[in-house]
Length: 113
Image 1 (cartoon, rainbow, N blue to C red):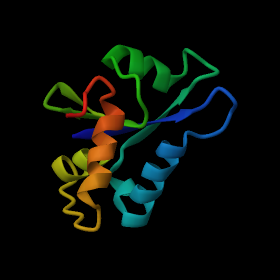
Image 2 (cartoon, one colour):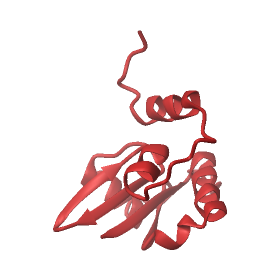
Image 3 (cartoon, rainbow, N blue to C red):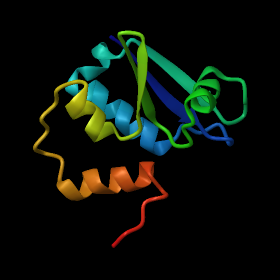
Image 4 (cartoon, rainbow, N blue to C red):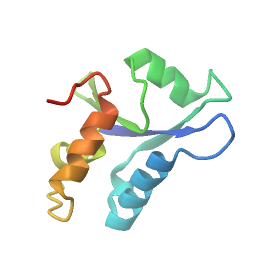
C-alpha cells in the first residue's frame, strides 16, 4: 500500500488552513510516518504535482489522500474517514459534529435535510 497526502498552497502563497490542520493532526498522532509521499497542489502553478493529481482524480477540495493498493487507487477526501478506514485510527476525541462538517466540506453537492 502507498499513501499520498495532497495538500494545497493558496494563490496568495499561504498554506491551506485545513491542510495545515490535517498535517498537524498527522504529526501529533505519529501517523505522518505512514504517509509515503506528500504532493503540493500549488494554485499558482497549474502543473504542480498536486494540481495534476487533483485533475487526474477529479478532486476539487484539499487536502485529500490517494491510497494505492493492488493496482487500484482510492481517493479519500475526508481525513477522519481516511484515518479510520485506512490507518485504523479509532479517535473517540473527535466529536461526531466535527466529522460531519468535514464530510460536508468535502462534498459540497450534499444538501442538508
